[in-house]
Image 1 (cartoon, rainbow, N blue to C red):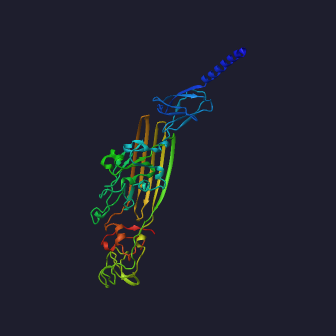
Image 2 (cartoon, helix red, strand yellow):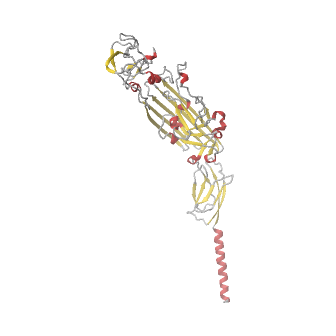
Image 3 (cartoon, rainbow, N blue to C red):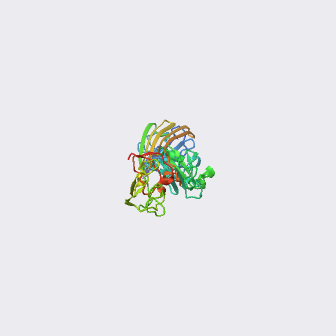
Length: 476
């Protein structure tokens, strides 16, 4: 018994020494530095051994020290993750010094919004309501104008076009109206940090028989090419727009244009879109009685043997009857003087024959590229619009350029340029005014007047005296 005990003690000592040495051998410390592509240290990078709870963070100098127990070469994966950067995973291969360079991942910045004065913040950290619209949402239906793209995208955002012509100014309001004055409810428009004048043109009752005869050439927001827009951030409420002062009392639309690609090399893209326009709604008109006053039983364009002139915008004349023949307006005579009697019939499509189906074509060519510290983008867009009114429309050429230079981790220089040249064609007068074509079409065109007479004709509304519009070529 005593001899057996002497054998056990050396064995026990050997086993204890073996396992102790084994434990010391498996203790591993991994160190290194984490930087970005500018070789600037990244503090706060999370470093974890996948499948375990072992991890650490980098210090202010980007250095780290990770105590890793029981790891094996070839099967242990170490993960390096940081907000705004791609997660890097490295397989441990008995190298106890691991230096990592993280690459920026701009897709992870989707929860970051641009606030007042261009400051970027995480959306969840804001104490007020904001809405962000990306380019993918804006271009989902390839709208011809940015204002068309914003419709229905943000709760409380109201985009109201004036309908005054091919350029039609749009009024943008947030959370309803609080003023009766023109432009008193408009949101402030800021493009790449620069507030712009988005003033409207009044086309209401004040222009009736006035000297201005308003022509709506559109507001500045309509000159932007939607394909050049990276995002639109809507700031609602006083807290969100306080930095812009009283001009932002009705909210702010922060428009950010596209920058150069973050991928090395040069990229070329071409986008095209085509849209059709038509008259949305026609009022209900009566086609039972023709032009005239006081329920007369005859009609005469001028004084003839039938009686005195019955030129009027009112339709209290004789009831339509193809068997009745009257001296009516003659579109082939410069003064409209009739030379013969014509049947007394209603032309039910006389207004519809004047308007046409409009179309808008937009083409955009863009080139972008990047190096390690520089990115750039330039685009040229061309828009051709033929409006629903013959011989009206515009051609618009837009040029956008952007250059970004990353000088250091904390300093970035950016430059943006937007240029637009619009050639308007016969923009019609608008508003409640009898010198406008729209007013004449709605109120002064009587049912017994046909507009579809020849390919070239002059539109002369009888009650408008000597007012004659420019000759229009229909080519129908």
